[in-house]
Image (cartoon, rainbow, N blue to C red):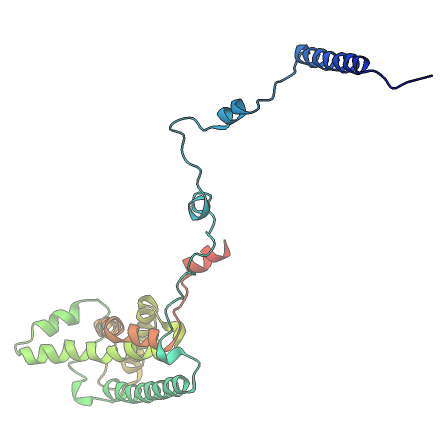
Length: 248
C-alpha cells in the first residue's frame, strides 16, 4: 500500500532543488562574459548622476538647443502692410488711378513747356548761340556773366527743366525707377531735344552742358520726391542681385 510521501522526503527534495539552484547560479557567475545586474540599492546608486553633471534640458530649452521651433511659441509677426495706394480695395484702386491720371496730365503739360522752351525758333540769337560739345564751356560762360540774375536764370532754368522727369517717370513708368535709369532716360531725351533744336530750329544749337544740367535736375527731383512717389504707387522693384540670390 502506497502512502503519501513523508515530510522528510519532501524536505529532502526541496533541499536538493535549492542546492541545485545555488549551484547553477554559481556556475552562471563563473561563465566568461557574464555580467551581474545591479539590483536594489546598488542599482539605485548606479543610476544616480555624478555630482556637477549638467541638468537635462527639457521643453522649450531642449527644442531651442536642437535648433527646432518650440511648441506653443508665438508666430512670427506679419510683414508690414502695403502702402494705401497699393491695396486691393476699391478706394485704393480709385486713388491710384487718379494719381496716375494727374501725373499723366502733368507729363503732357511738361512736354508742351519743354517743346516751347527748346524748339521755338529764336532768330535774334543766331549770332550768339554756338554748338558746344565740350562739357564745362557753357557753364563757365554762365558763371562769368556780369549779372548774377542771368547766371541763376541759365543754370537754374536748365536744372528745373529736367526735374519733372525725376518726379514723373517713377510714377508713370515703374520699370524706369532707380537713379541710374532716371539719369539714362533723361539724358537720352535731352540729347534728342538738343539735337533737334540744333539741327532744325533757327537760333538754337546743341549744348552738352544743357544736357548735363537737365539730367542733374532729373536726378535731384528723383531723390527728393520721385523715389517716394514711385514706392507709394508701385511695389518695390527687385534688383538684379536679389533675383540672382533667389534663383541660386
